[in-house]
Structures are given as C-alpha cells and as structure tokens.
Length: 102
Picture 1 (cartoon, one colour):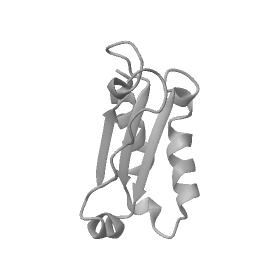
Picture 2 (cartoon, rainbow, N blue to C red):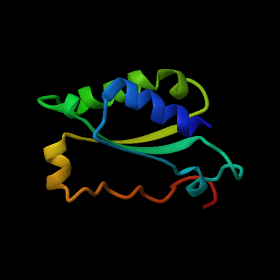
Picture 3 (tube, rainbow, N blue to C red):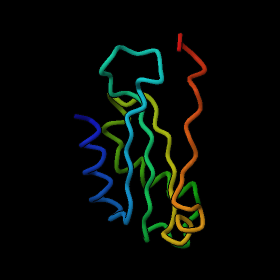
Picture 4 (cartoon, rainbow, N blue to C red):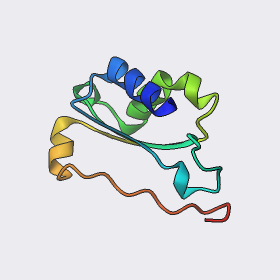
C-alpha cells in the first residue's frame, strides 16, 4: 500500500510527534481503490525555525519516488508541536474536487 510507504518514509525523515496520512482518492474521479491523492498532516520538532516552503520541501524530498510515480496529488500540512497545539490539533479539510465528475 502506498499509504503505508508514505507513513514509513515520513516517520524516518521527520520523526513526527503526530502523523496523519489520509488517502483522499475517493474524493476524486478515479477508479475505486486508487491510491493517488493524499493528505498528510505532519507535526515535527524538525520544523522549528523553518519556513513553510522548506517544510514542504522536506516532505516532498522524503516522498520524491512516490510523487514521481503513483501519487498524483499531495496536500501537505506541517506544524511544530507548539503550532499544532495552537491549532487545537486540527488541520484544514481538503476542498472538494474541482475536476472530474465528483
């Protein structure tokens, strides 16, 4: 499962205190059972004093192989532990698919 690979790679690369990887492919016009659209919420001390673009680059780097292959879309939400607490441990919901038939 691609979802498991994503989880493993992010754990290794970022040592998150919280990680949520969701397969959101069902929200898009893809065949049932697809693993092509994901949302990741990563809380890591490695994001301390790091700009958002650098955080996203860290995630993209860890998942470069998946992004070059089966993963079509990746929504990334990155937080430090303090930011996560200030967010009430909630990340934004993904928007509805704008293309395709759903």
